[in-house]
Length: 203
Image 1 (tube, rainbow, N blue to C red):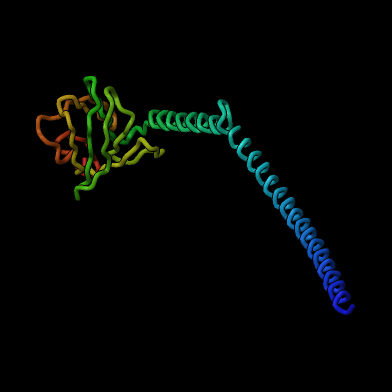
Image 2: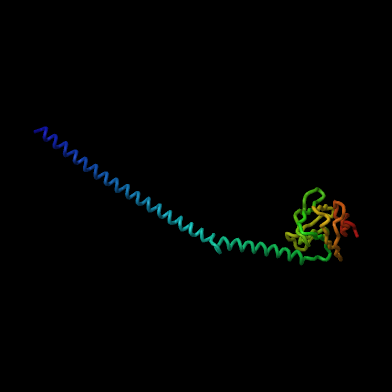
């Protein structure tokens, strides 16, 4: 009789433990499912946010989008600022100043350079055929400085990659003259180009 009771009690305890365990497993599943749902919802929200951001970014790069408009506007502004500098440089004509403009003949660009007496470059670059917009002042300074104006010491040197295609339009107080690059190296612009500089010659 006692054995039967013991068996019954053990079975009852086992059943209760099994039920409790099943309940805990169900609760654990519910908890894990809830956590998964929350995590899944968070991930979906983040994915939706990223998709919206990507869509917004794509709009910037679409034809006629913000980026294209910015590039076009920037190029337009830069071109017009350069044109404005050229206009200002051309209009600035101080009557008592002296400057040089370089004229290139032929169909190819020509490399030219001015250096100071210490050998450092004041200007160097490839100039296109025709009269170039740069003005190199050897007597006094420009009224308005732009990206096309440079001031030279009277004893600056000059070098051209193609001397025979290089001419100088020289503006001196009261006169203009056009001369061809001399058949020798220009080591001193005042002497080699016969420039009139009152502050140096005293005349």
